[in-house]
Amino acid sequence: GNIPSRTVKASMASASSTRSTPSSSHPDDSIAGANTILKSADVWEVTVPVTVKGRYIPGIRQPNHRRRISIEIHSLLPSFEDDSMGPVSSSPAEEKKSARKSEESEICYVRFLYPPGSMESIAGPLLKEAEKIEGFADAVIKKRLLSPFKDEKKETTLQHGARKNNDEGSSVESMLQSMDESNKKELLPFDGWFPRYKISIREFQIEGQKKKELNVSFFHKGRKKEKVLLFETESGAKEFCAIIEKNKKMQDIRSKRRLENALGGIKLESGEELTFLIDICSGTDIPRSDIGKNSDPMVSVWFNGVKIHQTDYIPNTEDPIWTLRRSSLFLWKVPAIDLFKSEDCLMFEVEDFDLGSSSTSLGAFNVSAKTLYHWNGERREFALKSLLGEKDFGKGKVALRVRRATEDDIDFMEKYERSKNKKREGSTLLQLKGGKGTIASVTTVYKKKAKEGPDQGKEIYLVRPGPDPKRKDSTTWLTKEKIEEESMAESRNWIDIGSGNLGKIFLEIIGCDGLPNMDTGGAFGNKTDAFVSIVHEDCMARTDVIADTLSPRFMPWSQRAFIFNMMRT
Image (cartoon, rainbow, N blue to C red; front, side):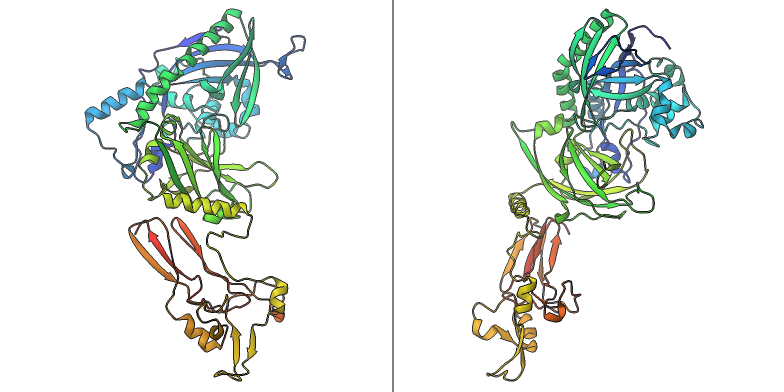
């Protein structure tokens, strides 16, 4: 188990990478994250001692906390875009040039490796399954490394920044699948050692050095971690610091190369900003994390390690549908250059909501910068894949719609957010009339007998939500027959909403019959206050409220007529 304090594994870039071209049935396979192959690794054997308030106390007896720490350089391999998502066809010469640029693009990671003896406490129930697997080195390690990927042929790096971190095994898995048996023997720095943390160089900080002792910090799953590393020699500690410093200085150069690769010929304007309208539509076959009931799925959206949006959870369902009121729709504004510089772009994670405890990850997927840039609002489904270190449920899809936001979209969302901030019941994008509280319902007279006029002696009803503004005296009280007749007249006020330009839908809400009473005190006149909500593509609307009736009629002078501008046919 002992190795020198520094082992350099270079010239690994010559190994070919095995990757599958994404099929049309799984268009998201091409955008699951950065696809890399290990190019070189510097590895040291260290001890990570117990600390007190972040400080190492030499006098305290230390348990065996052997670790290996590596500084890894990965080559970024070319990614594939789905044919439906924009201009991706290119000549063989262009493809060869793109592949060459990709291999010139590099990403640097710092990785902690745990010794084989630590596997029992980490892997737990995976051990028995792992023992059945035949293959290289330690079968337990292989099972742990490959379990999040199942049949995938490439590395999935759903990690970035201070909030979501890719912590187990992806570069080793990618490496193993790209090398023959003789080359695998060269991987002794990883042989039988379990990769625990994988940290981007930008997130790894050396806080101080004292001889062969280093104080370091990094972020892992939203929490800052501080560790003390005891190297075997002072020169080993200095060498580690020097290589970290060298790679930090190269960040800008590497970032520029990755940017060129991500753009793939796209020309951005100076200072260009992009505003996307993102609609998280629905989920299909969402896995269960609890026994005996379906999950309560919600979706969190991450960019560069920061959560930028979260839907509400939909209780007890494997086929959730998120609506505007369930926070399905949101605007996202981002500098174009930042979008393309991001290693992982947007990550969508589905979680099972648990009250009073941390939510369970049910799977996630990435959407690349190029895909977002070319997306024009069509509905697309993405298969869920397990985050590294999380359970792989092996199923589930989420449907999205994304397009560039128009001025109408921005205005719509601003109004909706203002209405939400007022904490009013539902959305008040359009001012609604009608609706009464319990006391007002009981004390209001809705029916009486006409004492005079052409309807003398007949039962007449209070017209709701109000009379015709042009004929108040003659339309405040009407018989049932006249209310029915008036409701069939042509609508006067048409509300034009939606941002599409492919066509128009004209919709009039005339009436309802036999509604259930959702209020208490029906015998005293307190009945359902009825209205109709309509959601279409990127907009929603509501009729006026017809108070205290189970058979409402929406009058032509009320809010009942809508024109929906269609984005798609």
